[in-house]
Image (cartoon, rainbow, N blue to C red; front, top):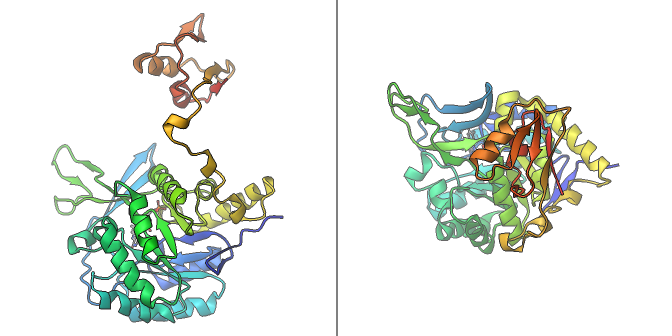
Length: 393
Ligand SMILES: Cc1cc2nc3c(=O)[nH]c(=O)nc-3n(C[C@H](O)[C@H](O)[C@H](O)COP(=O)(O)O)c2cc1C
C-alpha cells in the first residue's frame, strides 16, 4: 500500500500538497482551516520587515476564461499585510494546533544584508520548518529593486542567498521566477551560494488584455494598469518546463508550483523532478476542499503503479527528455479515425489543409487519409472535439 507521506531535507510531510504563498495562505485562521481539511503544509504569504510600504490597487485581478471557466489569473497584488509579530504569534499557534503540518516562512526584504538576516533570525525559532526566499514577485516589488528584480539577476540572487544561509537554522528554499531567459543559471547561482532547495515557479509576467472602447488595459486601476503575474492552469506547461530544466541540472529538492489543479498535475510535476507541490489559484477558485480529491487521486495512482510513495515517482520522466537532434525521427505516426465517434465536423480537415499538408479529406462522408502527404504532426488529433482521431504507428 502506498502512502502520501514524504520527507524532504529531514522535514516530514504527511502529504506533498502545500498551500502556495498567496491569498489562501495570508490569514492564520484560513491556514488553520486548510490544515484541518488536510493540506500537508503552507508557504505563508510573503512576510516583509515591518514598515515596507504595501499599498494595494483596486482592481487587482483580471482573468482569462474559456467557456466561462477561469483558466488563468493575472494579479497585481503585493505581499502580506500582517506584521512580523502577527506572523510569529500565528505560526506558534498553528504549530501548536497542527504539529505535523509543515510551515514555510516565505520572506522578502530590501537588498540590505542586515534586513534579510534580521528577518531570518527572527523566524529561526518561530516554529517554521523552512524558509522560502521570494526572489520572484513580478509586479510592484521590482520597482523597489526586490522581488523579480532579485530573481532575474544571478549575482544579487547569490549574494542574498549567502546572507540568508549564513544565519538560517532551517533549510532555505529559493523561489524562482519563470521570467528569465535561463532559469538554470539562477538556480545554479543560488545553489552555489548555499540554497538547500528550490521552488518554481512564481507567476509569469503578463498583461491580460485591453478594453477596445476605452483603450484601458486590464486589470483596470482607475484607467491604467501595470504588468502583473499570471497563474492558474494556463501556466502549467511553463512551470513543468522550468522544473524539468532545473532537475536536469541540479539534485536539490524542488517544490513544484504553477497551474496545479488536480492530482494529475501534481504527479506530472513529480515526474519531472518535484519532491512536493504547492497550489494557489485552484484553491482560490474552488476552495481548500480540493485537497480531498488531490490526495485521493494521487494515492490511487501511486497504488495503481505499485509505488510506495511520492518519492518513487520523482524524476520518472526525466530520462525521456532529450535534445531535438537526439529524438528518434525514423518512425512516424498517422491519424486513425474512429467512425463511431467522428461527428464529421471537418475540423481535422481544415487544420491539416490550412497548416500546410492537406493529408485529410472527406471521401463518401468519411475522413480519409493520404499517407503520402501526412507528416504525422498530430494537429488533427488535437482539434477533434470528440477525440475520434488517435495517432498510431
Ligand atoms: C493573488 C496572488 C498572490 C500571490 N502572492 C504571492 C506572494 O505573496 N509570495 C509569493 O512567493 N508568491 C505569491 N504568489 C504566487 C503563488 O505562490 C504561485 O507561485 C503562483 O500563483 C503559481 O501557482 P498557481 O498556478 O497554483 O497559482 C501569488 C499568486 C497569486 C495568484
